[in-house]
Length: 585
Image (cartoon, rainbow, N blue to C red):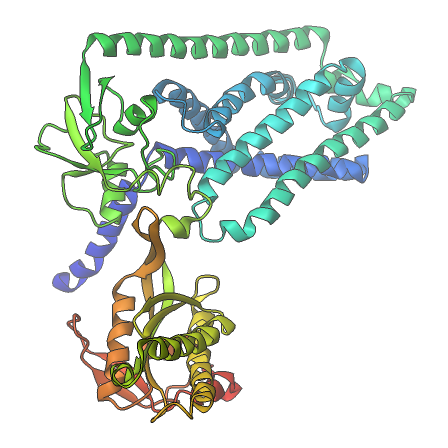
């Protein structure tokens, strides 16, 4: 029994270890920030209810406080507040170079200013409720902002905008690498503008109602009682606590700035090191800087799509010479390098490596083709793993065709063939990708799910047959025999991105699935059919198991044989894909 259970538990342990290796301070900051943003969103939606009525505000705040003051939720929330604040202060100390992009230091400054702006509000409500049992809800707060201390309304509006912008910047840095971000960005922007606008309008409408209610003596007696607002002595105590926290926080920030200055002096006294970029460029920097920070400090172009967050591998460098003296990779760096399949100790992330001796290296990605600003909004251009369906189409007999015709005539016919194939691919939702001689690679699934991608590829194969038939009729007077073709289709996880050099970059896909599709296209010759489709594509497209004849074949480069479906005439695929009875339940 033991020898049977051990193999089952081992993969899960390895998976857990892999997940732990991928967790760093930035991941903790992301999780804690997401919790705070969820609270902020809930608060803003509550404010927006002021556009309806004060009763709606009261109902909303009841559910808002009931959820966020529920003990387990409160523990998580206040823990996230503490962790996020501490990590923000640590980022102020740790970040040596602030010239990444203007938006990054802006996010840090906005985040560090939030505690200063909300401390009085938090102490007045939460600490007042905990110590004295105050019940400060919307009527009391709106009275303070619009009647008792009107100047505070501007502080409140400022903290609303600052907290929201800070959170949105964080979400942008998190989501911009996702495949859906480009399509979702306009809608996210609309939401990001609409929610705070409605929240501030709700506060304004609530304030107008409160100013009207203030004229009522009964309302003043009930809403502004000592039980809800507290006595003068209690308010004085709360203000002293808020002032003490503010002074302490400012003092902590001051200590961090002093620590930064002291660290800089110590690093300079500790000596300088030389970084050689392998292209004749050498810079001298203090010990303690990461290679990426050194590049930015000295205006040396260096690829870094994620801005030095260890969320991509585009800043990778290859060390020249001995690597034994280098610091060991951090768990996060080791996770990223393992994720990209790099086991070579000479490959390191420039944003994580902080050398303590002279170092020579060269960059693996050219900075003029891939920088922090170059493709940040288009992750597929910089490298992304995703499911795609690859289709290889090849024209048969092009060599014999060329032997009997002038070069111009041959090129004309091949171009007409590739045009017919490309038209079918485009009309079915695919993308012509590479043209090699008289063949073409097409990709499906760049903007849709895998089920639809497989069905698009099958429709395209059928339409290719129809287009080539039309082409054969058009060229019948000039062709001794009709144009024939072979198609191979397979789907799987591939890596897509820009491949090439300088001005010769092309967007393409790399991976086993692409190679298999090419092998299947070659098999159409020996199997005497127009198309060979992997069974994986057939099943994912929803075709019935008996829709096409199956065959087990050996694929060059793969250890295991695979099941494929042969299609003698691809025009039949149109009826199979469109027939509702052919779709698997």
